[in-house]
Image 1 (spheres, one colour):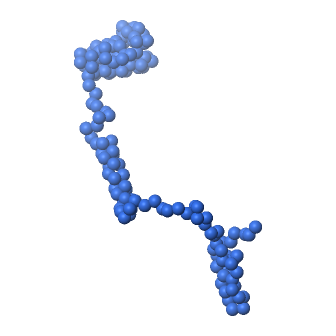
Image 2 (image 1 turned 60 degrees about the vertical axis):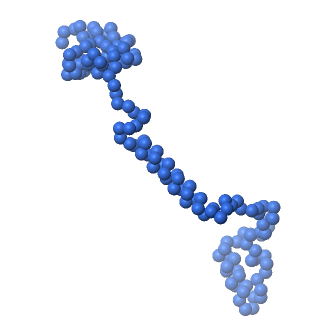
Image 3 (image 1 turned 120 degrees about the vertical axis):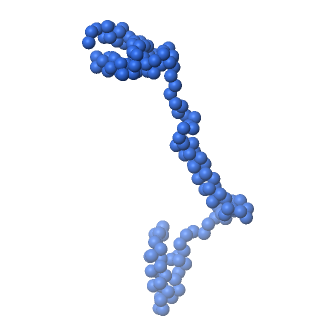
Length: 151
């Protein structure tokens, strides 16, 4: 089996054998690749005379689509995905139940901080009836007992 030569080796062999006194280079040295089989060389697909126009057109369309997607994603105030929070009734907060109905948000935050310090997970929710301190239903009895205690 013949050894595959690099292009530099072939160049050196050709230049050496082409010098006067070495004669003509033989065919085995100059053949770089086998002759392709006609069954493997078919016609190249063509889109007609405008084939050089389609590549840049596809690139421009792809960039335009990306620009539109990024403008929609990072646009301010018009996103369909995130809507501004709205106030709901006390019963619209899923698993949370109200345990305190303070008059202001400052009082509500103080009550929430007291419950969190005692180890009860609590949150402050702005409802249509005013601020409410809410906890999960499993912690409701503990939270009400903590709020009944004097400070």
